[in-house]
Image 1 (cartoon, rainbow, N blue to C red):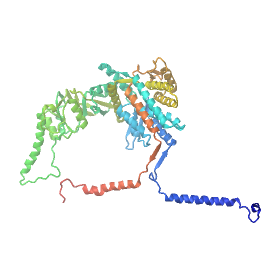
Image 2 (cartoon, one colour):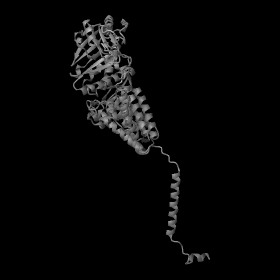
Image 3 (cartoon, helix red, strand yellow):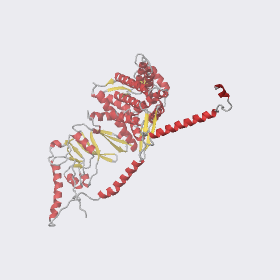
Image 4 (spheres, helix red, strand yellow):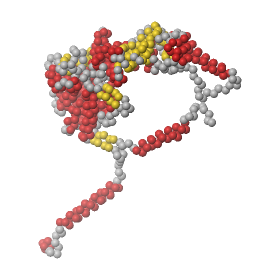
Length: 598
């Protein structure tokens, strides 16, 4: 019976297409059911519409490329033969500089990962003052060496762990190689500090006069002693003349302030004068807008006018009776007071800036007074010589021979304004370096010598490690060679040839080559320490620390989320701003305190 069913012509087998149609129908039913079920589920929206997210290896490589691009911008500014950058901003200001921190600030970088390099340059500048280009270059090179490993699938945490180990070993080696300048006589210490300042200035625009400015910087730093306030060293800029016309004042100097007619009748030089510092207005003032005086007799008006004059004369009498020969005020000293002081052979200056007044107070031992009552001798300052001197087109008030000696002023001369601005930035770096060397008192060989020695030490250490860490520490060691290599490239030398000589010298078992670095003058190698190319150990320690942390930070980021700006929020902000300028502004403008409405 069963056999007959298969051969029965009335019941043939269904064609294959029949089964295919049934399968497709079932599949469609499943898809529709799944879609309906999904529609019934509540949707979870984590990020705002339009949010841009990027993650994974490609995103990490993109961040590394951005940081390398930033490092390439400042690469050519490194060293004594480094080039300068001319930066023109949207306001039309032009800046010429080869200072890493200044360039990074002016570049206005918007890439979130590359901003990390801007931050470490600022950190290096505020902490030690120099090495800003070095720290950016090192961070960029650490990431460049890590890039092939990331592309090959190495987990970033393995790299970060090895980089931190290498950083610790490098810093310990720097401390071991550093030479102390502690225990030297003042003259010896001055000479050593001048070498550190000259090394810093050699890579700046004023490198041609580095010995002249180095001794000036050392004298200024030693003048303020152990004071931590950098503003005790003033730098005043006077266009004109040559760099050699710049000079140091062991005291305070500031430009002549705005003055009235009687000023020229005042004496311009005093020996051992007493100095009165005020934060008081010595000027006839009219009544306030909201003052109201009611008179029953017109003759009473004269008594009110006399009262105003008596107030100002009383103040001036008290200043004169104090015995002071120089009166400085942060507020205005009017024409009446100027003539009054001139008649009594007293010098006065009003509208002195807060910074200059505080420096005069620190130097002369005076105290800034907010009242002219009870002016005792203890609040007056003094100095050996006060004089007004012509410098270029400017007149300067100069206080020298101050008793506390806690201040110094450098008056900078030069041709173009941009040149003087860059000279000021260069001197700031040198001042910071000398202060750090004075406090930490350890120096290392510059010119790439310390970098090559650490690189050799890390390569040697890597051979004792089993596993992938050996490769990563070797990559870190190779990255440190970027400093001598870039010094050669910027000077136009054959970097490969010089680096091979340095590697051979540093590999000597006797250790005699540990201090050899790039010789910028000949294109060969030389003992950097013997050539007085020194830098404070703290500069190199801080640079390696900051560069390693920045590299590890970039490597640890595995996803970037960019939120879109809310157009409605911007519209609301604009509307509220318009409202404040319109209704609110109109409502409150023009109605003074206490003024009656008419």
